[in-house]
Image (cartoon, rainbow, N blue to C red; front, side, top):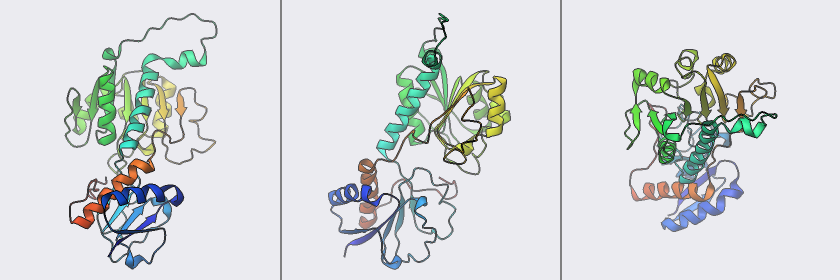
Length: 308
């Protein structure tokens, strides 16, 4: 009997074909639908924006397979008692690494001054070589680790911090409160790629912003609430932070009257650092369905106690 897979997310017309292609490649017998009686469903391909909040009626459910990398909007749902897998998509990782690398290079090379125009001033501000520029990445999961390796390959002096110990070849890593303080002290360019949990909300507060080298650049494609907005604006105004490039915000779309829009030291991008790509993400979903049907462990499972 085929397993029933319910697609509970936006853009069914975009996802249906690549999901069917990926599922066909696994050899699993399946019935992929956008609507079904809950008690008949074995797997839910899910996005929190779909509006599905109560999983209680899904009495035969084997797993929820999220299309989102972040799970903060679902991990606390008490009606969800089956395995929850987050999206770890090679396409998403590649896109994020490209965005991070581009903006780190932009700040490293001081491109903004030339793009905006020097207004007739022949000013030769030569940047240091990448090997003399210290970059710190907060968060060394799949996205952070890949970005760290790419920046290291460009010869940047890269370090990383994570809440649990991690090891990356050729990259200094820190953990714990003392490690975070040290990671911030060296961060001429700081990249935030942490998940949002109760332990990471407002991680970059006034005290921690003050630990950065004066004039440090911040790049945040992680989660908006990782940064205390008020503290960041104050640090920008004082010169403690030289510039902030922000792709994620507490409220999205970013309200038109938010001070970030017009601040001369803030670059706003509209949550475009990376996106789940249907072609590659469908293969991740299909592999977990295959595993579930074969009785094998699911991959990319969320640790409910950790929140990600």
